[in-house]
Image 1 (cartoon, one colour):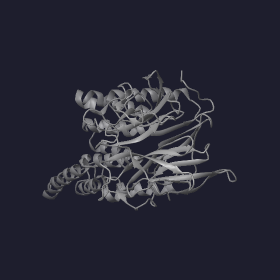
Image 2 (cartoon, rainbow, N blue to C red):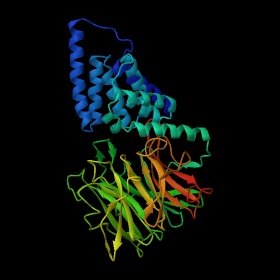
Image 3 (cartoon, rainbow, N blue to C red):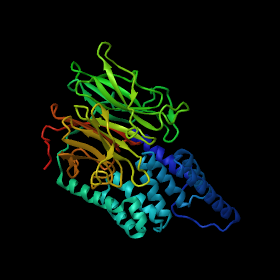
Image 4 (cartoon, rainbow, N blue to C red):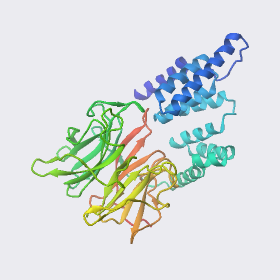
Length: 455
């Protein structure tokens, strides 16, 4: 039924809203000329909204532009871009194909980059490779570097090899009370695997606030308890004192379940309590069984005026890894390491360039013994999007990042990996592209045959 409704929606979207004729018929009437000019004006208004991240406002403009001129392939191209950003990948690909027909095979070079990317994320690897190669010949050297075309081509090749290897995939989607129609990610297990913390953007989030940028609810932290009697997770709730009206995410819980790190971002609220996103620590009240009030870490090299979050640490609490975009003028998000000197945190330093690529590095997970760092990156050869990697640390030196392959990674984004060797399992958040609108879902991975180091 869901897919039938989706097909009906696509038909209405393309047929009724846009009235697109992929076989344009030129008009030399004054009305036709006027409508084309007006369509271009509306298109430019939409592009301006798109450039500042207002996808929904931009979409309305692009639809209006198409109503005035159904042959305006650029309006359809930008409409496809907005749907890609909003994770409506199937619709985005349909619109991109229609735009290509309207452009009569002569679209702009940046169109080919988008067309390759949307094919890539949906697993159409041969098409993705073909159009990435066209992009590689059409774009300038600066543009190719900006779009990371060389890396994208390597990613497609890596994915093709993984697909040919036909590896056994033991990755299971957690059940409906954990994964909903909203995004779920950031899974963490405690209490010998019987307590699950995760982050979600559900309609019952504290404050009931929708983010204007993506029209999704703010993040809240949720907890679930494993019920052995019915063999599933239950008692799922976000009724936790540590949730604020802003964006909240639990990113680390100690093995004994009594200490944690979280990220709070309130910059979207009128009453701003953090400069952007900051890292907080909290402890569990063993008497009440409830978490105490989060306290921001008072160290300017950890909590800066930029985004700082996704913190993880070793079991001795002497080494912390976190993510920051403080060097956004040169790179995207990077992973930083900071160590305790005596009883205080020292100066945070970025990890070396073979870990921090020119792309995004995010959601680090350090094993309790500090020997292995798992993280996600879209700037290294992989399946596509953000992939999970691991680096072995010897004497403070980070070994080469190794992709965990198709047993863990998909063609879309894969993040928030956590590893529990005593349970012989791992958890990961992956963008599920099988639904009409792709969202993050939480998966469990059978790691009974997995061992470190990876050779």
